Image (tube, rainbow, N blue to C red; front, side, top):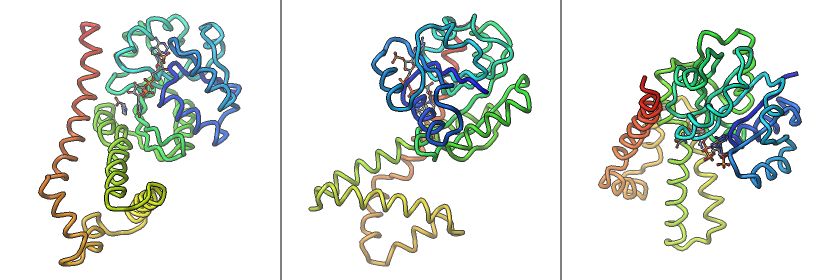
Length: 276
Ligand SMILES: NC(=O)C1=CN([C@@H]2O[C@H](COP(=O)(O)OP(=O)(O)OC[C@H]3O[C@@H](n4cnc5c(N)ncnc54)[C@H](OP(=O)(O)O)[C@@H]3O)[C@@H](O)[C@H]2O)C=CC1
Ligand SMILES: O=C(O)[C@@H]1CCC=N1
């Protein structure tokens, strides 16, 4: 039976743990989690998901077949330095670190490792992540099946070239935050135009879910779907004109480009720190 060691217990680690446990992909007691110092967070994960937590690295890594690296990229060097003597060639290392290359992880660990670089998003917690996976040559077919199954239980997956992961990060890794940002604006405006917050929230969520399902199920392009909502001289046209004036579509395009560039920069910072 697989044993999973999760290093880092933040938003992304929790989303994955929630998805794995809710979907019964693994026995929760086979999932071991650690972080740097936030003991309360570990207790909370233990209580919520019935996982095991520890600061004892022997206990964490003993017989672990899969290791998830889920700390911030800026903390990767220190964290990997701390755990490297516990990592073995037999373990499958799954890194969700934005920007950090598989090569950098091997350099930091000072050894050759079987690595899958994954870029999921926090919607893994509700089984709706979009996860891109890139692998290095040491990953066996069996490990690849394992990791594909793991991420398939928390959403959709695609295998990509490692170089494409920056783009995935800018688009769908960060993507939920763009939608939440929109939802925040919709909530604020709904109250301003006279709706109660509770009703507004339900209607905003349903509008987002409905539009997402239309995008998913309809054969029509987004542009066509938008036109079908927009009656000439009507309300949508009036609203969209304001978005056009603010160049909101351009802002979104620049936003995704900038997030992609930041993913590249995060990786470059790690490489520069190693002088590679
Ligand atoms: N959040 C997201 O939407 C997504 C994040 N990612 C990637 O996931 C990673 C984690 O992001 P996120 O969950 O948001 O970050 P958080 O800040 O929420 O969590 C980071 C975690 O790493 C732990 N940590 C830091 N240093 C160490 C260390 N030396 N040893 C062990 N644990 C350590 C922290 O512990 P403590 O709290 O004790 O300091 C904390 O539990 C990042 O690399 C990010 O690029 C990828 C896709 C989406
Ligand atoms: O903001 C970040 O750096 C991480 C990576 C993708 C989503 N959150």
